[in-house]
Length: 266
Image (cartoon, rainbow, N blue to C red; front, side, top):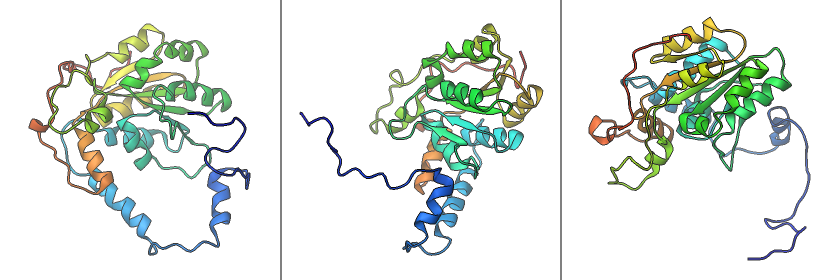
C-alpha cells in the first residue's frame, strides 16, 4: 500500500492549541454540553475502585500502587505497558501536569525505566517513581546500571509475577498452556544489588512502604512479588463485571518460587 509523503493520511491537519493538557482543556471544553448526568464519572470511578478493594489473597497490584503513593505522595511517576498499567492509571492520584508519563497508544514495553531516568535528570531534587512489570524491566535491564552510575533519585517498583499477565488475560478461552507467557521468577532485587542499587523484596504492602522509607533518596529497586491471579479482579473491576477468581482458573506458574524475605534491604 502506498500513500504520497507529505499529505494527511488520517484527515486534514490543523494546529488548534498548544499547551499542558491538564490546564488547557477545561477552558476549551467550557462551551460543550455533556450528555452524562452530573457526577456520573465520579460514581463510575468510585464503583471500580470499590471493586478493586474486594478481599483477595496475596499481594495484589492495586496494593502495590496504593502503598507507593501512600508512602511517597504525589511524585512524578512513569508507567510501563502491561497489566499493572490498568491498575496504576486507575488509582494513581495527581492534578499536576506531566506528572504521569506513559507510553499511550503504542504501549511500548520497556518505556518506564528510561523515562524515569530522563524525568529525574529533568527534575533534580524530586523523587521519581518507575512502575514496571517484570517483562518490561527485563527488556531494559542494563539501564539499572545507568541509574546506579548517575545516582538518580528514582524508586523502581517491579510488579514481579513471572508472567506476561496482560497477554495471559487476553489469550483464547480454554488455553491452559502457560509456557508462551510464563517464565522463571527473577530475583530483581539481587540483580539490582549486583549493579550497585539498594534493593529489596516485598511480599506485602507493609514491606513496600518499609523499603521506600528506608531509602528516601537516591536509586532504589523494590521487587514486589505480586499474585498474578489478582489481575482477573482488576480486569473485572475496570469493565464492571464479576471476576472469575478461583485457583482452578489460574494455571500453576512453573517459574514461581517461594519467597523467604519480606521488605529486606540489600
